[in-house]
Structure formats: C-alpha cells, structure tokens
Image 1 (cartoon, rainbow, N blue to C red):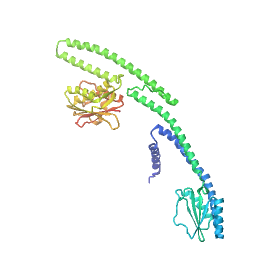
Image 2: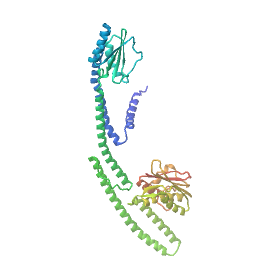
Image 3: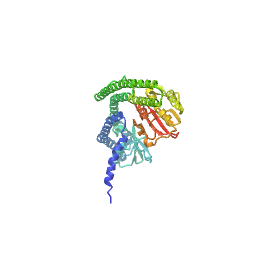
Length: 454
C-alpha cells in the first residue's frame, strides 16, 4: 500500500507560499505599510488581551463581589426583619453609603424574560458573585439603562429592586486605555505612512523616468531623491542614460557617414548606366543596382532605429492614409477605417516607416488590404493591417520577426527585400512601449496588430 503522507506534506509545502503570495499586496507602498502596521497591530492585540486578563477581569471580579456582598447583606437584613421601618433604614443607607437605589415592589415577582447584554462576559462576573452571595432567586438586566444595572431579588412579600451605577460592578475605565492605545497606533501608522509614501514616490519617479527614456521621451524634471539607496540607483540610471545616449549619437553620426559614402558610388554607377547604350545587359545591371540600393536602405533603416527623433502627438488617420497611398499605387485595393480624433505619441518618421512596412507587405502578398485604427479598453490605440494573401502558419509567427529571416512561404520577404520589414516594424513599436503581433486575418490572409500605450 502506498503511503500518501509524504506526498501530502510536499503538496502543503508547495501550496503554502503560493497562498501567501496571493494574499500579499503587490504595491511596495502597501507592503511597507503591512510590514510596519501588522507587528504593531499584533502587539496592541497582545497588550490589550494581557490588560483584560491581568487587570480588567481581576478588578471587575473584586467590584462585583463587593456589590454582591452589599446586596446580599441588605436582603438578609430585610428577610430577618421584614418591616417598613427596616426597609426605610435600608433605603437610606443604600442611597447614602452604597451609591445605589433600593425600592421594594410589594406583591411583585421576578421577570421571566432574560435580558442578555451585547457583551455577556461583562455580566458573567457579577452573576457569579450574586450566585455565590445570594440564596434567593435574582434577576439581572444590564441593557435597559446605559449607565445603570437593574438587579431584582425575590423576597417574602415581593421583590427588592436595586438600581446600581455600572461603575460599582465593572472597571469602567478600561475602554479609555483601549482608546489611547488605538489612537497611538493610528498616529504612528499615519506618520509611518507619510515617510513611506515619500520613499515610494522617489522610486515611482525613477521608474517613470526609466520608462520615458525607454520610449524616447525626456524627463527634464527628474532629480535623484529619497533614501541613499534610491538616490544611488537614480545616479546609476542617469549615468547609464548618458552612456546610451552617447552611443546613439555616435551610431547616428556613423550611419550618416556610411549612408553618404555608399550613396556616392551608387549615384555614379546609376549615372554611368543612364548614359550607356540601352541593352538587355544594361537593364539587368540597373535592376541589380536598384535592388542593391533598396537593400542598403533597409539595412540603414533597421540599424538607424529611433534615430534621435522627437516624440510628437500625431493624428493616426492622416498617417494611415498617407501610408496607404503607396500600397494603392502598388496595385492593391486599400480600405482605411480610422476615427479622425484618434492620436498617439510617436516619432512620426520612424512610426510611418514601420507602418509602411506592414502595409506594403500586405499589398505585395494580397490584392485586398484593410487598415483600421481603434482605441483600446485599457488605454492606448491599436492598428490592424489585414490582407487576403496566402498567410503563414501560426507556428511561424514569431520566426517571421527575426531579422534577415526570409520565409519560404514568402510572407516575411518582399521581392526586393532582405527580410527586415517585420523586424523593423516590431523594433519601432517596442521602442514606443508597444508591440507588433501576427494573427489570422478575417480576410483569409495575415493580420498584423500594432499596439501602442496610452
């Protein structure tokens, strides 16, 4: 027979951390508050419990026994001599010396309904003391009067009714201690919340500056703030940002120089071929030269990346229509569906190049192209490029984004390209904080989805 105990123990050990992770807050602010508040709250509960056990219950028991003794003595005195004179003397003594009111209800009986307090443990000590001191039946009500107790004892001829201040039976100042304890806890928590929030705000500013830099935007007001470790991380981020910016500037300068150096001999070759006598060989050389120029353009576009271009708020419909004109000239039927009010923060030239790659790719491999833009439920915008071409299998979607990848099924290549169109589009989208994904198109071909954050 297989012992299931080891398996159950391993399962419990695996599930316990997961359950704790689900219960833990995800925000650093609330985690820090929990780290501070939870131990304080546990300490306060422990102190309150110890106070009630060691002080409140003891004092309440002593007061209850004293009150029960006074009531039992008055009942015994009246039971021994049940005369109006004895009753009058007891009423006077109760009012003057015992801080309670005594009244005799002739011919009455004890109520039959039991009145239970909202906190029965408050009455338990007094009931125990009355049970121990009194031989006669009694009835206790601590709910009718907020500041008084109604105690009735059955005697010969009627009921002796005692109206007693609650302070005579219970330690009434216990709630003051609890209020002071709770007030101190709230005050300390508020102070801790202010300091923690200041530290978390510095981390949030650092995260916002890093996110803005990743999307090509600037955060000119960002300055290292907060604790020493947070300032150290902020200084490291600024140093990294400066190094990356220098690298981008150097690459841009290098690309400009390479572009000039390559295009000069290409221009001379094009001029020489234009002046050469027309022949099949010359036409073939012109086609080779045009393909070489196109390849160089794609290489430079892929290597250029952001190119130091500033971010601007651009209307998407105008940009889509401008890109779609090129696809229409290539012979495709292009349909545009975009709200004129839709806009996004992008680098216009880089984003136009990415969108042009997607639309032209759809136009090359399909006869019908649809380009639509819409807002996203969680914020941001989404651009859909659909075609009715042959498409590619789903398992090849991610492979199509690899640079210089030319799929055999002719989806990631154009007839003059080097397999960089989709790679450039995704690179530009991710530099804007978004992404490009591929799906099956309702038209039967391929759908490219461009998502940009809000």
